[in-house]
Length: 129
Length: 151
Image 1 (cartoon, rainbow over the protein chains, first blue to last red):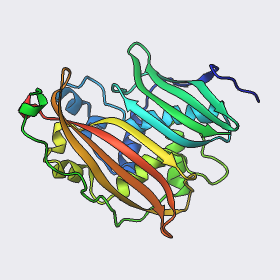
Image 2: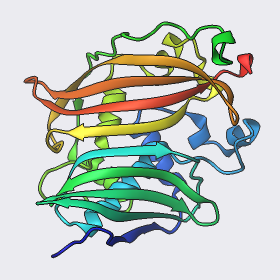
Image 3: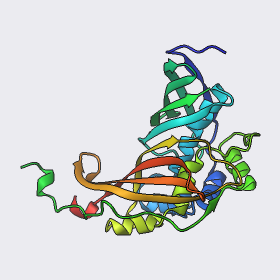
Image 4: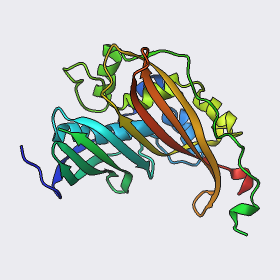
């Protein structure tokens, strides 16, 4: 398969961010922060009216986009910036663009966008294919 | 004199050790559940989902999230926010492999922002090592700690 600088990668779409997954991740992360589990806590803190996805899940969505675009790739380096929250039931879309190619090493720019609210995560990654 | 210079200094926590004693092992069952929770199937080659870089280092570092906040004289209930996270892998993590964590706080810088008012920006570095001491990855995380009491 050939790649070129400027190529847009196929989007990885999460049709509805899962509140059940947030419960699982509270266990994975050993972090029972109630803003991920209890909508009443989110409301009381003035953070919205739906539970908030754990930040690392949003990074995982962008990683999954890379794996779908480059099957069998390895992530060497990745940076992510957390710009806004992702809420339960949001439709989230991970996108990427190739910014550089050096042999089997590919640099990409990444975004995670929530339908109706724009970019909530941005980042870069270097992968090997 | 800058506006920041008029604020009380942030706690001097740079250099605080985050070395852990816990051993973190990625099980096949948990890796599969984690992968499926994000919308993919687990890899067939024994590698773990790379987001375990964040999970393993957070779970096995020497302080809990609340403990890190306490070190920074910040109440975890006041809502620390993730600012950014970066990782450099030496190689992929593997299902069934066990790891330990070393690390330290790099800095805590007090700033004033239009959106959040006064905040402390915490940067810490963690390394994930096999039990033989091979470094598998290094990660730098940045948290934003809103200082409502100073706003």
